[in-house]
Amino acid sequence: MEDRTMRNLFPRLFLGGILLGALALTFGPYGCTDPGTTGGKCAGKADCTCDADTDCGTGEICDSTLKKCFKDCTATGFAGCDDGNKCDETLKRCVCDQTACEKLAESGCHPTSNTCQTFCKDDAGCVNSNEKCIGEEGKKFCIDPAKTECDPAENTADGKNPKCTDAEKTACDAATRKCIKPAGCSADADCTEAGKTKCDTQSKKCVECLTDADCAGKTCDPATLVCTGPAACTDTPTCYTADPTSYCDANDTAKGCQKAAVDGCEVDYAGNNSAWSTDIGSKKGSIIWGATVKRTTDAENCKDSDGNAITNGMAEITFYYYNPGGNFATCYKCIKWGDGNKSYEFPTETVTTSGDKTSGTATFQLCRESSGKIEFVAWEGESDSTTNPSNALCADLPAL
Image (cartoon, rainbow, N blue to C red; front, top):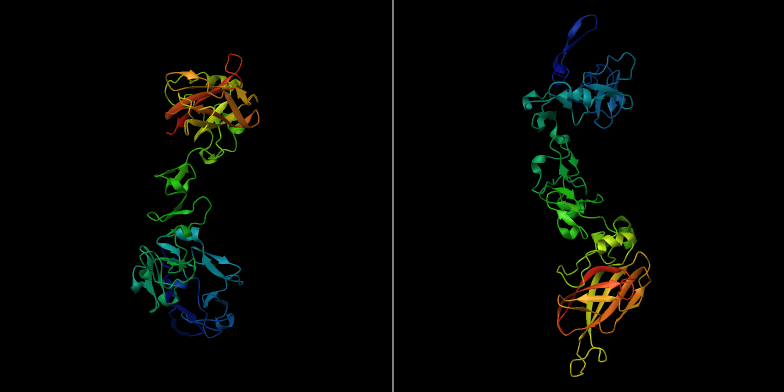
C-alpha cells in the first residue's frame, strides 16, 4: 500500500521545455498537499509558515489554524484527495475521513493536520528534522513537539499536567499531546452529572454512591455503587392502593411503602391479629404503625397499691393510623393489649385522636411500673364482634 507519509519525498518532475531538475517535496505529515512552485513566499516550500492564501503556491490555500499551505480541493481540475481523506468545502482542503482512513493499513487521522497519515515507527521515519515520532504506542505520528500543548511525560501522579492550566482541561492526552478534560475524577467536585455526584477514586469514575449515607434511606450496592431499595413514597393512601397492608411513614418517605406488622412484637402475644392482613384488603380495620412511648405522672389514674401516685408510672403511647373505611375515631375500650400473660383494657379506657376518621395519630395511656414490650390492637370502636381490628403493633415501654 502507498505510504502517504513518505511518498511526498519522491520528486515530481516538471518541464519548462527542458528538464530543469527534480524537487523533493517534503510536506511530511500534513499530506493532501502538493506545494506549487509559483506564487507567494511558501510556494514549493513544505515547511513554510503562511499567513494568507497569497503566501501559498498557485492553486493553494493557507490553513489559518495550522498556517500551512494545502491544495484547494474545491478548485476546478483538482485531482482529488488522497485515500482516507475527503474535501472539506468550508476549509477548502482535504481532511481526514476517519471511517475510510481507519480501514487503511496502519493509518489514522493525524492529530495536528487532521489528514489521513500512515503511522510512524520511530524518529527516522519523520521527514522534517524538527519532528518526532510520538503518540500512543502503535499509533504514533510525526509531530513537532514545539507545536503541541503539552508533554504527557510531565503528567503528575494525579493525572494533571503543569502545562495544562485551563480550569477544566488539566490532563495531557498521550495521542494528541493536547490538554483535555481528565477522563476520570479525583474528587466529588469533578462529578457534576445528576445522579452521579460521588467520585470513586479507585476507578476514577463518578458514581451514585460510596456508602449507605449517600442513599437517603436506601442501600449502596458495593459492587455497582448504585443506591438500591424501594422508591420513596408520597402518602399512605397511595401505598395502600398498591398493597392494602402497607403504609408511608411521613417521617421517612425515603424508605418507600412499608409493610405494616401483623405481629408487632414477633411473639405470640394476646394482641396478635394474624387474620388482619386478609381482612384489610376488604377495607376492614386500620393500619397502625410508628408507636412511640412517653412516661408521665398521673396522680389520679396511676397509683400504687397504697394509693400513692407512681412517678412516671403512666406510659403514654402514640401511634399513626390509616383507616381505609373512614371509621377510626376517638373511642372507648377500643385498645386491646397483651404482654404474653394477659390482655385487658387500659386504665383510662379512652383513645384520643389527632386527625380525621381516615388518618392521623392516636394516643392512649397505660399505667405500668415495669418496662418491656407490649403488643396492642386498635379497634374501630369498642372491641367486640361488630367492629374491625387493626394489625398488631409493638410498643417498647422504657423503665421508670
